[in-house]
Image (cartoon, rainbow, N blue to C red; front, side):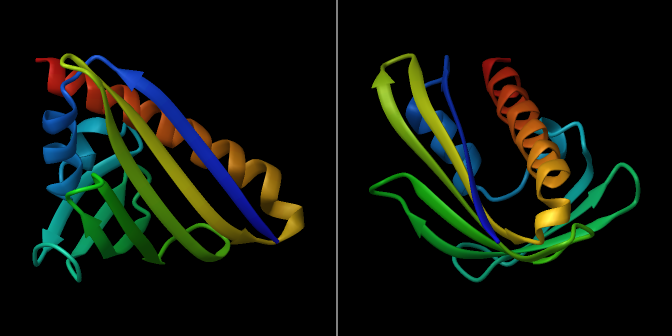
Length: 140
């Protein structure tokens, strides 16, 4: 079953600054409480991002698309401890005014029905906390 989640928040950070952080691909260990370590191999489209969760779980993302004009990044989660068949994430940044931006993080997952509710809740909470962490990090 395919499920789509979208977390959208107006952050009090300049859109260019927010986009620079997102398009830099790394840094998720500073923003997401659930992530203990983040490293990146390569740069731009085709780069691979390796995440270690605080519980020791391993995640691998491949960067599929980066559109600097539209401030959009898409990644494919190719390894994950979560029970999903597929996981595609997209992050978009748009300017609200000189001091704030709209961040939209969309995840499309293919998950079995019996695990859907718990997994959707976990992913929604993790991304919400990560977006809050990104905002706090960039305001310092």
